[in-house]
Length: 278
Ligand SMILES: [Zn+2]
Image 1 (cartoon, protein in one colour):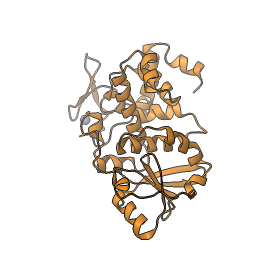
Image 2 (tube, helix red, strand yellow; image 1 turned 180 degrees about the vertical axis):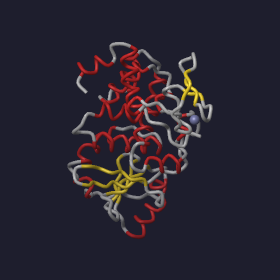
Image 3 (cartoon, protein in one colour; image 1 turned 135 degrees about the vertical axis):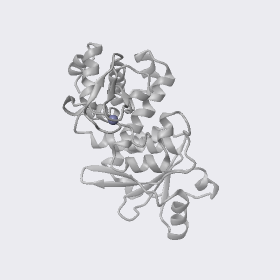
Image 4 (tube, helix red, strand yellow; image 1 turned 90 degrees about the vertical axis):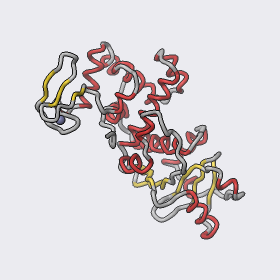
């Protein structure tokens, strides 16, 4: 989105909220988030109550945007800076909010991007990622393994629930699946339909003193996705497998939006309902 269009959106509190609401309710038709009933009572607090199940809610209840203390205008400013890949410290200074709030907003945004991907709901369920929003259980015990699958000019980074890092090590040792690493990120030669498997070394590869392949792997030769994502991952300071998972899904999203405006797509992801919230 060009800056002059964007400036129109954030010129007032009202315009910013109106813009986000477009992504919340299709054709401005509100419904109960719990039972989808359309008959609602307006309460004086600006909230609404469902005539059928009596659930009380406001426009952002149950949606990703509701998990950080940012106003619609602050969210739109944040989303613009996120789109431009501004560093968190700079975001905090530019928005005048604490670094912790920015970290939270980043985690929420990345989770909403992950949730909107094809296998997002399954990942959230299997790895219990909703606890991220509640600020608990922020560390995964296992390193999820992802498969990188280019199809035409798009990329799919698929979560592979049946493969764990031990399996990747086993493929390497017993079946000579070549691996390379970039810091603690491990990636492999093609496996089945995937150009590469990718995961975060939780110490297993280093413990087994696995010497990485010195020759380039097919993924290294990929000018499209890896040409875009490789340098970014090289600079990414992964502290744990969860951050790598979220970042890979972010890169999938960014790469697949290189030729279209990512701004409304990000707004749409952030305004969607959090799955598995109950
Ligand atoms: Zn209801």
